[in-house]
Image 1 (tube, rainbow, N blue to C red):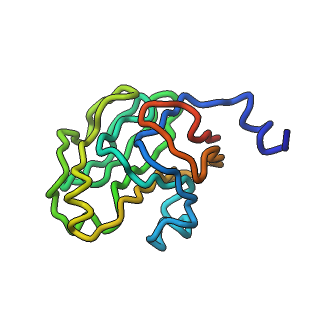
Image 2: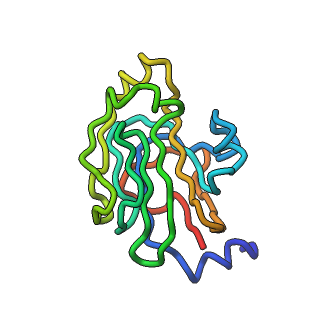
Amino acid sequence: MGLFSKLFQSNEKNFVSPMTGKVVAMSDIPDPAFAQKMMGDGCGIELTDGTVVAPFDAKVTAAFPTGHAFGLEAKEDGTEVLIHIGIDTVEMEGEGFSSNIKVGDEVKQGDVLVVVDLEAVQEAGKSLVSPIAFTGNNKVEVFKIGQNVVAGEKGLLNYK
């Protein structure tokens, strides 16, 4: 077991995958702001299902009216994460996104945050790769690069 693994072993967080799809390394996300970790460390998920859930119990700190992105602050430890659905999806002006989330809402792990019409995203010519960025100085270890994950399941990543 490597040193990095030992750092995380004793401090596993209660974080579940917010999306279903194939895990993509942060450096492979087709948007330089995410790929270069300007928004924080994490990973991406290429969506195969349009339901996006809360990865932990949290307070909503940002919610775009278009439904394509939102920020969450973990109740457990204050960790902040940005979940951005697709790349350049802001240009869709909310079409294909169904969300009732607003800033200040309290969400429980597994609560549905947004439902995305994947066909609408593809028809608009947008990427389904969806970044999950930890916006603080978190050390993030992603376990399943290149593998499929299911929304609501543990094992995607850990952070410290």
